Image 1 (cartoon, one colour):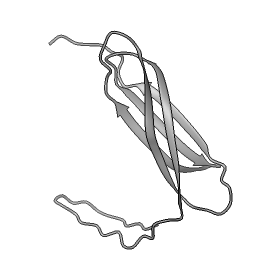
Image 2 (tube, rainbow, N blue to C red; image 1 turned 90 degrees about the vertical axis):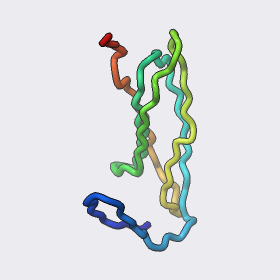
Image 3 (cartoon, rainbow, N blue to C red; image 1 turned 30 degrees about the vertical axis):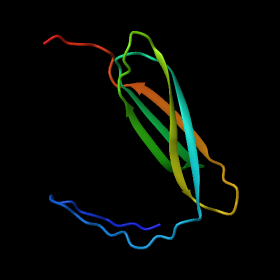
Image 4 (cartoon, rainbow, N blue to C red; image 1 turned 120 degrees about the horizontal axis):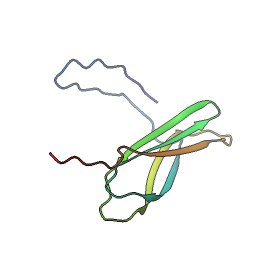
Amino acid sequence: MTERQLSLEGGTVFCHLGDVEPGNWQVLDCSLRLTGVLPQRRVAVAVEVTEGDTIRGTRMFALPPQPGPDAVDLTLRGIRFYLPGEEAARALTVRADAHYLERGECCLL
């Protein structure tokens, strides 16, 4: 892994991260089904991978409102985490949470 610290001061900043050797990584590919998603409401989804007390990765999404009059089920696929490869087996925990971003009110202006 390679890392650089940057300070953004406006304009365009180019950052060369150096050399990284591909391989020796493990991919955790998750899917998630949201059931009964109400129409016309955006949904915030968070998926987190931990190993013991250490957070290994987090993915967050804001899903657009779903059209139509009825609640729908949505399946999210391709939620990927790239983890450094290790020889020994790993005990990972994957957590998911979802919340509405609004309560569905509308305002006539």
